[in-house]
Every structure is written in structure tokens, then in C-alpha cells.
Amino acid sequence: MTDSTENRTSYSGPAVAASLSLLLAFLTLMITHHISRLTPTLDKWVHGYGYWIPGSRGSGPDGSIGSYSGKETLALGVWLGSWLILHILWRKQELALQTWTRLFVIGLALITLGFFHPLADPIVLFIAGWFGLP
Image (cartoon, rainbow, N blue to C red; front, side, top):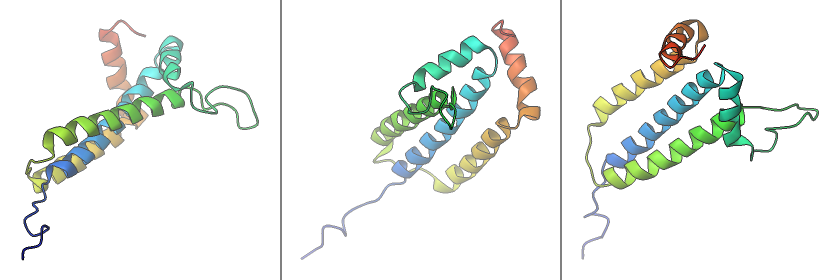
């Protein structure tokens, strides 16, 4: 009698999907952070996605977290949405984990550097100039 777990094959696609969705969420958090700093109008636009989070508005003893609630909401949506889509697409795929691990670490390092304002601000302002933003 054979055990049903012996015939079961595990694929690397779901692991890559989960980690890529995490990178996309971090990228979303970084981009929305820089967008919200450009103008008060864009800050309100980003904040509009997070009004449902307690503490996003108000002036209680802890103050208000402001537009960070919108940044969190958008990152959460990208994380869950991309994870669902990529998992469905790659659930039975065998992907190169060694190559993906290198790409993941490089991507994580670049996104982390994107939060460093002295490095990111010239790039953000250059891109904002293309769109006619201050």
C-alpha cells in the first residue's frame, strides 16, 4: 500500500509568489510615501484609502497617523491581490529558487534604499517634474 504523500510533488512557485507579493507591497509603500510628500492634494488622496483605520483621523492623546493609514491600506491590497493572482498562476510551477533568492535580496535592498530620502528625493523630484508636479 502506498502513502498518498509519497506521490505528492511540492513546487517552488507558491514560495516565489508569496515573496514577490511581499516585495510589491514594500514597493507600494515606498512609492505612496514619496507621492504623499509631493503635494497636500496627493497626501489627501493617499490618506483617503485609509480613513477606515482607527486613528487615521482625529486629535486624541495619540494624535493621528494621517496618510500612513492610506499607505498601509494600499500596500495591504497590493500584497493580498498579487499573492492571490501569482499563487493561482504559479501554484504548479517549478521556478529557480537560487536565482529568485538573489533577485529578492537585491530587490529588497533597492526598495530599502528608496526609503532613504537623500538618495531617493532627487529621483522622486525628477520623476515628479515629468508629471508637472512641484
